[in-house]
Length: 255
Image (cartoon, rainbow, N blue to C red; front, top):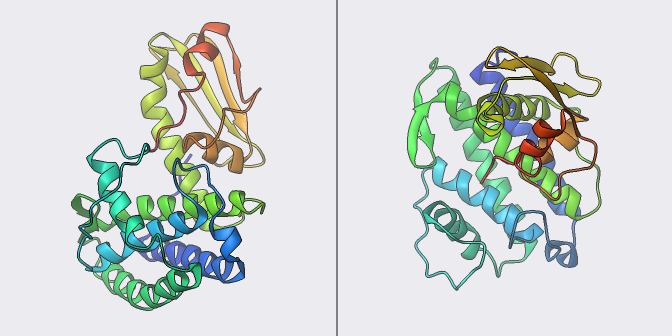
């Protein structure tokens, strides 16, 4: 199901997402920046600010500490932590946030490349340090998913022909294989079919197997589903009625 990715490969994927996001942001207008995304409460500008803010803190910048207004989408400590990065950039022109991303990339990528040469060192990750091999796939997934949030908001197709997309789909499969058995809570045979990517598709049994349920779609559709973006598309989940009902609207697993 999933390939092994070296830390060097993971850093290259992060660099690719940063470069693609920077190029995308440079082409957008201020009207584009104010478009809503599928992330509750966040515009295109806010998503870019989040991407920059988290990576800046991981690079060593202090965590912002600003008073937040009452925001319906901020409901817990994790939300508050992430919203700080957005709030301090909310009034900035999109071009200024893009400039910050460009400057950050020029420091962040050399730092990560240097760390990757050390084997598997502990690195900064939101809320705790982790081995680089554990932290970097999550960073790839987070950054790539938010690049797609921006692309959807401005009417562009998902960018799936890249290493970051493959790594992100692997993260989704890993999450689903852990969570789906709990959601079903009964014997079942589960297949996840990524259209055109048999190398990313998988099948597993819950409690020895039983009635079948299948999740089928292309990479863009399935990663958006895992991220909880929008409504669950009709026909993506098929199989035994009870199993389909158990998964309906519950496959979005990211905060």
